[in-house]
Image 1: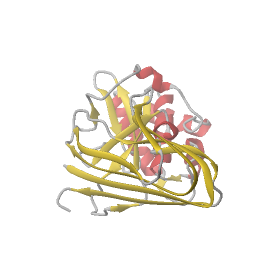
Image 2 (image 1 turned 90 degrees about the horizontal axis):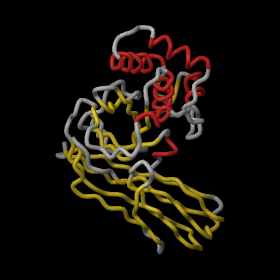
Image 3 (image 1 turned 180 degrees about the vertical axis):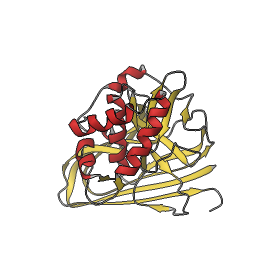
Image 4 (image 1 turned 180 degrees about the horizontal axis):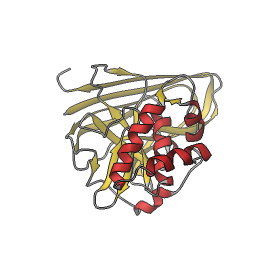
Length: 270
């Protein structure tokens, strides 16, 4: 599948910012099943945009913009050719051994309820892959997709207690449970060409990958209850959302920030 992505983030400030610094993890890398045909990052301000890599091998752009800044726009636009690999990830850059992704974080830490949930899934037995598919099914049944109750700082335990959340929350729950079950797991940010034909989206997508012996890394989309297909564009990985977020940064000044995001993910032919 050929997928076209046009992702625009606009900031406006009632009081101009004196300095803006951001880390943009918005550029995909090629691997088996994903070929980046064309991709570029643009900003509309008079700032410095420096490309590089982070410790995990994600492509990052460091943005530094001196003020006064009243408006800022960052845009990524490009095309990616994808093929269905059955959710398996081969040919990607791997800087660390899988065991690194057993490390818990504040966002993925499991409480007693999540420990019990993971233990219940593991007790069903089967291979590691069978257990992960069982986890995917159980999570998809028990936690509803809902954009209302959670924020970017909601933890896996909090979302699981509410039995509601967005793709970020469902991914954190899956990651935390998989780690409790002894399987390395990591967060993935990217894009999804939706099967319902909806092109305009409110935000990028998120899923997770778990390491299975003799198979390698395998993707699981807890929000949709499936493994990733050729409709997915994989952009960045991290221990949790914070390590793979499309935009993270800080500013000095800039009171009254207003944020507007426009994202179009278009399969070829639409």
